[in-house]
Image (cartoon, rainbow, N blue to C red; front, top):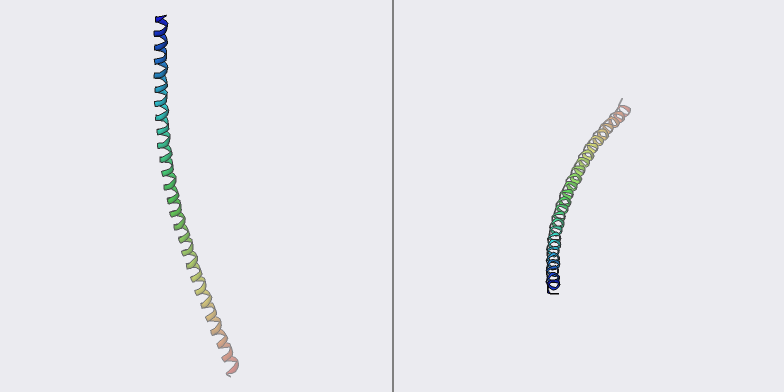
Length: 98
């Protein structure tokens, strides 16, 4: 009977040791998961910042190109209009003056 009691006590100790080891393994896994999650969140945040910066730069570049094109188109239109006004004035002068 005493031998059974000591075997039972030994098995109980082994079971408790296994439980404690399992708790430590779970705690370590949870800590690793938290570290991985934190790292992933930091990477996502850095990627979002980089994406926003790239988007802002691209938007600015597109606006600058559009502005430059609009200015070039405006200058071209003004030059054409000026030439037409000059042609009209010459035409009027030829028609009025003999």
